[in-house]
Image (tube, rainbow, N blue to C red):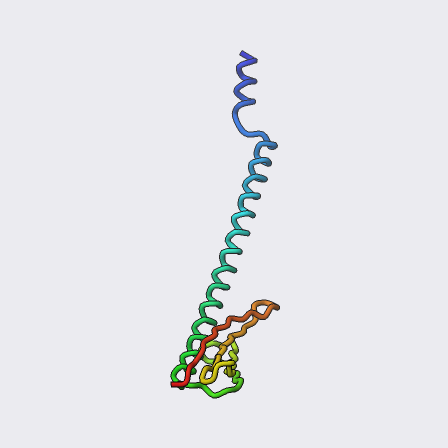
Length: 127
């Protein structure tokens, strides 16, 4: 009878060591999950910035295309109302072929301490 009582008491719950090991495993899993979540948020933000830069570059390229045969030169600016974090540059240069001009639209923005950029290039022919 005494042996039976001791066995029931020993098997009745978790020891402190088992609880500590379970908590350690749970905390490792939680840290890994939170790190993955933070990385996911960062990637979504980066994707959003690239999408906005692409929209601005396409808008500036469309302005050049609507002008027909663009003038040579370098132009720069920013669209503070719609694209507050971005600035743009348009560079129109001549090529080795007469009647063909090369236009580059570059959009720049700061991501943390690093400057990022996106560039579109198109060639225009005199009509």
